[in-house]
Image 1: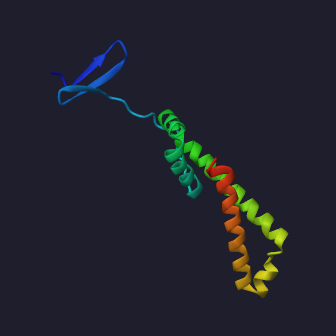
Image 2: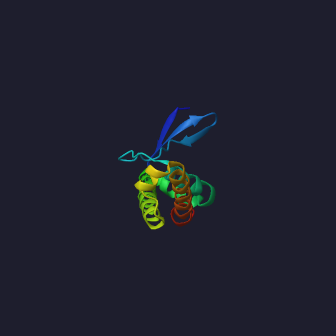
Image 3: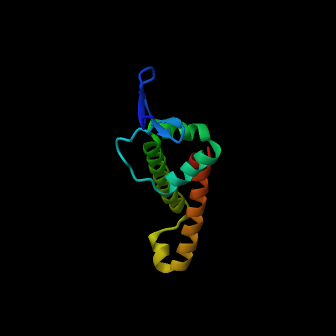
Length: 126
């Protein structure tokens, strides 16, 4: 038996594995490989666990990496914007940082935690 055969009816190559011919199928490559940060990884995990059809569709179409990179960028932009707005609203300034650094750190950590919760609720786990 031949190791590889070609089926003209569907245009696929098949490889002999044991007694069976298995189609030689590969995923399409993405045109551009973008960096996926923390938020993109969290969203990927969410898709894998809760939205399997969406994850599989993006993966097999070769658009997963770009989609996750866009989600990551949106979440990072939102994080910076929220932290800046909350800090301004609550009076967490450079002056506070100079006068009482420990209080500034505590307040900024609280603001960042609230911003992370908002991003998780509005972008990641939707």
